[in-house]
Length: 193
Image (cartoon, rainbow, N blue to C red; front, side):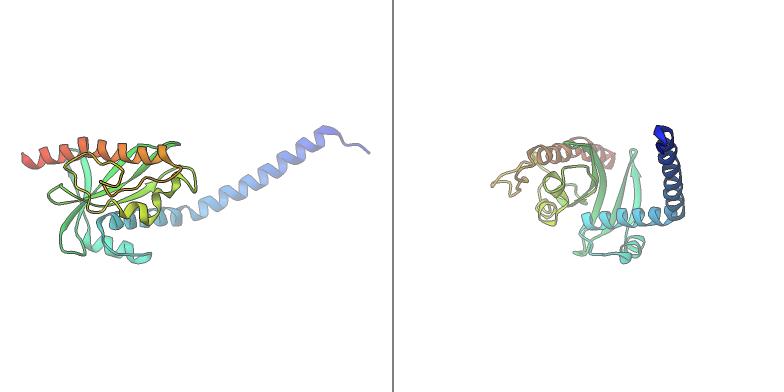
């Protein structure tokens, strides 16, 4: 009673079609909720980079209340008054990591002289190694770093790289230094006009 390969192929095709349909249906049903959650996460990241404390659902309300969006010389950024009373600008950045694109926000003071915070919104680095760039200890060490010179790792700079993730650590520094050299200079020039 051997049914042969044809039966197996038809069975696999039928199961694949049924489960693909189920997954497509679930995706379509939750698409709006996914978009809302992604937007909330983006707003929370911007607030975090600015040093404004907001968690979960509160992040959307705090963002809508405190943050304004501005475009200067084609560069979109966000501004707000931080918890310490200073004006902070959060500017998006993008660059190449070891395994893919790294995106996020760098917040700077209104004089464009100091980093107020950094947040990552997308990264594909190795979990447990390069993926540790999203950990609090790593992001927090950039708060207060001067933008007057090139950012480096080391005891003198007060910034530690991630052990075992040299390529990702170097990629983050490269992204930040390029951001300072290009995006911030464009904003300074536009502000001076």
